[in-house]
Image (cartoon, rainbow, N blue to C red):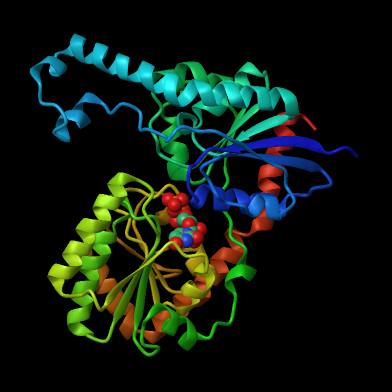
Length: 411
Ligand code: UDP
């Protein structure tokens, strides 16, 4: 039987949940049936696909700029208060000009490079590894090359006029990583293509490891017997590191021996500024010795297994929240923000705890509750692992995605 070629495109400049999730899919793919090729941004240094023996192409991407902000945001950020730009006609012209520049610099050159690549490779399907508005160059390219297109929607990014009217109608199928993302994206589309909700997956074996807790703690600069709280994720305001800090400060008053780690890096100037502001707050609270910044780490399974509690603190709905299922796979009790995909994974009090987004008081109470209640920790540990085995295995994920491929390709 011949293999069906699939071309995967992910143009993220940095490593994040979308690429890690794609790596899980491709690791589980039956290579006697499917022949994957991955296209990445040249800026991205992730080499796991090459390590799996999968052909990788890298395309030049500009330093991705954000699309021109809506007028209201521009004004809110104080970038312009001018009356001129608040007039409706002038404002439309201003933003149209911005959009043209954005398309000319960011979208069309990348679309050109991808079009040649798709024409060369002739895949049966182009699998775009994020939402329509984040995958415009890939969508335009696959459309031009007359390829079948699958959009794997991993974010709440809004669909603008051009996405809804011009690009989305070219898509043969959509995968959403949570019901929340499906609801948000489908509500914007008049006649959506066939679609499925297929949650991300985790390999429990990667996280079921025995670690030398003392050694990992020593490596992090934490006393081995200190109760250890951790937050793992990109440093960006909506992930809520500031909420974690405020909550930890409360816990620390009751338990001065407690320690916290913040794992992850920034990938935007906004993230850099936010990290500085959170650091400033930690200094003001006098907690520099108790809240440690570890930056981006490759050894997440070891860190996860060492934590007493993993906290997820997003102040906006999380599209999915890989770290939550990773924590569960590691048998680490998880507290998650009650919203988006996180609320679909966690059942409060059963396999984790949920707290209202942005509520540091409630988060601190949940952290204390877990510290003090060993039976609860044990229950969450057990049920968290069970949840992963029942709902988030790589096998089930790959089966669902490839069944969908077969449906879309009629094979
Ligand atoms: N991650 C990592 N090292 C870090 C911080 C995060 O490998 O220092 C991984 C984390 O284990 C998870 C992913 O990055 O697999 C983040 O996925 P999530 O869905 O939680 O957030 P996203 O970045 O996609 O918004």
